[in-house]
Structure formats: C-alpha cells, structure tokens
Length: 114
Image (cartoon, rainbow, N blue to C red):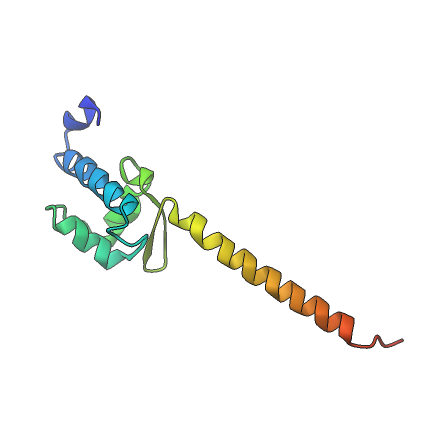
C-alpha cells in the first residue's frame, strides 16, 4: 500500500485498497469462488461500507486498485484475474473434440465425385 493512496481526496479509495487486498487474499485462499455475480460482488463491498452501483463498478474496474483484481465483467459475472486463464483450456478442449469428431466423420464417409 502506498502513502498517496491514503492522501487521496476521495475517502473511498483507502477503503477500496484495503478491501481489494482482503479480496485478493480470500481468492488465493479459495475462501471465495473465482467467479462471482455483480450483485454478489457489490454485496461483498457493502459489507465493508463501500456502496457502489453497476455503472460505478464498470468505471472503477478500469482504475487501480480494482484493475489489479478484476479482469473483466462478462454479462452478469465478475471475472477475477487468474480465473480467465482457467476457463480457456475448457474451450480449447471442446474445440479439439469438435474438430476430431468432424475429422473422423469425414474419414468414415465415402467421397462423392461431382
């Protein structure tokens, strides 16, 4: 934590820095799931007296400290850093299965001369 974070004119910033550190710890200890709905995330922040709405959240994930924790918001879900890496292999495996299935069907079907 840096000293300028406490000297910021907005009193919300020091709270947000502290909560983001807490959230990072809970995510690494797997006390919190890596995916969370926007409503659940906003409720989590409210436990620490940080009241935001969805539009505030969309703006704040582009700035520190939330940019260091949240990678994206997809639909109604907050995607944390590191969680997006876990989802990619599933999609790649699914793509590989589809391609393998298409190749096996193509190899098994007789070709037509047109």
